[in-house]
Amino acid sequence: MAVAWRLLDTGLRRAADNIALNRTLLESRAAGESPNTLRFLRFTPCALLGYHQSAAQELDLEYCRDHGIEVQRRITGGGAIYFDPGQLGWELYFGRRDLGVADMESVSRRLCELAAGALRRLGLDARFRPRNDIEVGGRKISGTGGVSEGEALLFQGTLLLDCDVEKMLRVLRISAQKLSDKAVASARERIVTVRELIGQLPPLSEVQQALAEAFAQGLDIALAPDELSATEQARFVAALEEIAQPGWIDLVAKPPADRSLRHATQKFPGGLISVSVDFDAVVGRIKQVWFSGDFFVTPRRAVLDLEAALRNVALEHLEDTVAQFFAAREVDCLQLDPASFARIVRQALAPAALAAS
Amino acid sequence: MECNGCEFRPELYYDSEYQIWLRREETGDLTVGMTDISQTVAGRILHVRVRKPGTLRSRGKPVATIESGKWAGPVPNVFDCVIEAANAEVLENPGLLNAEPYEAWIARVKPAAPDAVEALVTGEAARSGYCERCRREDIHCGRGAR
Image (cartoon, rainbow over all chains, first blue to last red; front, side):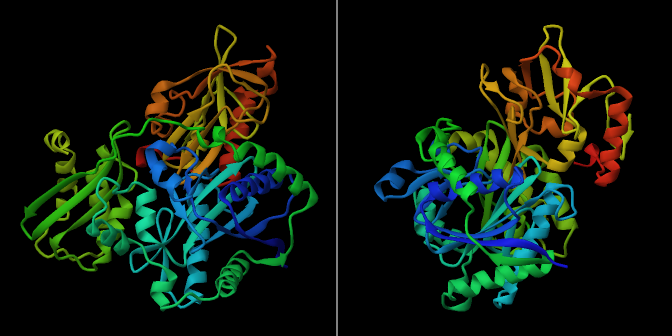
């Protein structure tokens, strides 16, 4: 028989409330006071840091202040995101052993595959892309993150129903140095919204129903709508006291790093490749890369998938990661040697390029 | 010593779930790290945050947090203690926790009770419990493959 889970819809709220509810629901699930829960949530405009991130490093705080964008810190891992009422949040609270898989990567995969299945119910060709994204045609439509506490887990995702790309880029400082039309266009190519794919915004209730049905079927659970319990209400008040104050947002405070992107362009046999690299020089890790240029790769989405595969890769593993990526799938690059993608990244990070950037 | 490829060290102390290892120092402090099981379950670790030295952490409150594959999680604490120090090398290079979990210590703590380790598991009892968890949850470690 299907196990009973609660279906909770906390509606549109400010970020501090939503994060305090994360803390509340995870702690009370860990304490054995709450049932497993699927929660839907939405946010008034806000910038949300990943748990281990620093606001000054990730966000344009002045822009946020000037535009009434609330800054908050999530309790889950992952990168900073911009949230407004155009996105739907979905969250699952459950026990570590409830999915029957031990490692966190498998938990992410299982839940992302179910969420992708929900989007297919809406007529979108959505797929899970390791390690944490759901994509349509190579373009990201939902990002995810999680947190564990004792025996309880919280896994959450953001579904882009609609998205103000320009504002998102400004908030996230991705190309705050010079927000060119090209940067906006390039970011737009890499993400996609439900509105763009089906030409209109479906009713929220329809999207929520698709997600609820996909999780219910995939996890063999029965969802019953309910509210917060009295003990959860009490925990919420306490959690809000910690979270709705500057100490929480400044929990990790590092000075703004040099986020200027490093660029390189080179003509290889088989095509011209340009790359922009967001590099964390302190730990020697690629944060993100963007490829463009004049080269022939089929399927075209392989380039976007390669960018995803290179996220958070230590520089020493660059060549291996690129080689493994091309070994694992059928990609036609014509005359272009796939190793060129690693070479151009190396070139962007070479000392001379760093001095010039 | 190994179970399912997960390294075990009999001279260390462990919590009952084998999430952390602890080593008793001559000063009475305890050095805390993650087991091979924990680093395997977590996957590639990207961030580590240790509470400030001098902070009192009560039982159940984490001494540190880690992040892997967008999962944030606690490095649990099984007794009342004060944080004495964090391993700066690990803070700068969290991947060490994956590569050499028993060398890459995370924090040194001073337990409130001098006999705190008495409640922990060690030696042969620890080995059998450690292997039991590997088998029960079908956990296989493979550090070379990472």
